Length: 83
Image 1: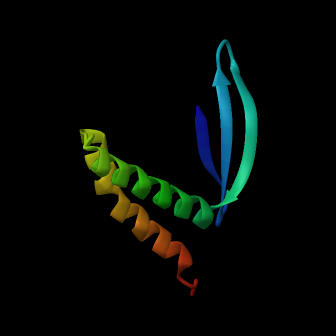
Image 2 (image 1 turned 180 degrees about the vertical axis):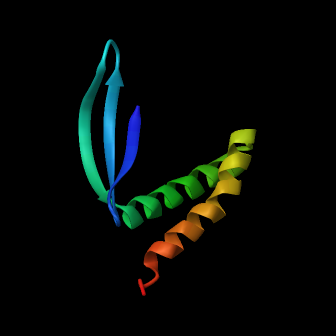
C-alpha cells in the first residue's frame, strides 16, 4: 500500500507500507506536490488515451476522466501566487 500525506504546504510524503503481520515501512520519499500532481495528470491522460486507442473503455476510465478536471483545478491553485 502507498500512503500519501502532507509533509509541508508544498511537499507530499509517500510511504510504501507492507501489511503482512504488522505494518512495516518499506520506503519513504518526499515529492513537491506540484511535480507529483503534474506526473499524475500526465500518466492519467496517457492511460485514458491508451484505453480509447485499444477500445477498452470501462467504468474506471469514466471515473478517471471525470476526476481529471478536479485535479487540474487543484494543481492550478498550487501555481497561483499566495496573497
